[in-house]
Amino acid sequence: MGAIFLVIVGIFSLSFAFGQDETVDRILALVNGQVITLTDVRVVKTFGLYDDTIKQVLQKLIDQKLVIQVTRDDASVNQEEMNDFFDNISEDMGNDKFREELDKFGMERNDLGPYAYERILFNRILSSRFDRAVLVTLDEIQGYYETRYVPDQHAQGLEPKSMLDIFDDIEVILRKEKSEEQVEEWLQNLREKADIQINLTV
Image (tube, rainbow, N blue to C red):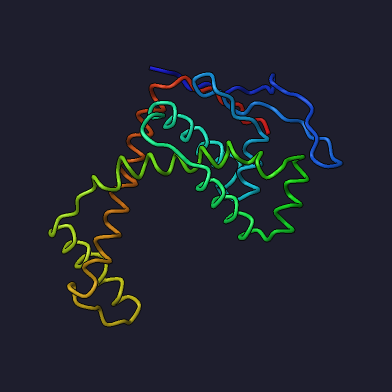
């Protein structure tokens, strides 16, 4: 079983330039020998691949690398998908802001390629492994309707719809919840078996 080590000193550090400001970059994690740097986390966060705290983004990048390491042959990403991904980021941020942030990191659009590739591949692997395998029973749908939906509607002063009217909506919700539970269980198993070293002194 692999161990997770909390490294309390930034022994892996180097100078890195962001525009005019000099910032110290460092290795935040080693995932079975693969490096995740502070710059990686900041790039991912800045361009909206993950929109969380640095600690949360780091954990998501760790999980992302673990999944890709063990299932690399299960999926692939083509250039058209990458271009669409870049276009969506640019559209969400606005072209000027997108260009400005690239300049701050001293990057070109194509330099986001490895980040986009891993994010798309990660999503695809999880989707192929879990989304289609999740089954929701009629009893589960009825249970959700009676114990969660109806009380929630009454609490809001609303008249509940019939179960038939929202059957598909409930199924989607339950599939998503069950899929997320299965994913988290699988990820936890991967974490326990991996060699992960983390430095959170940012």
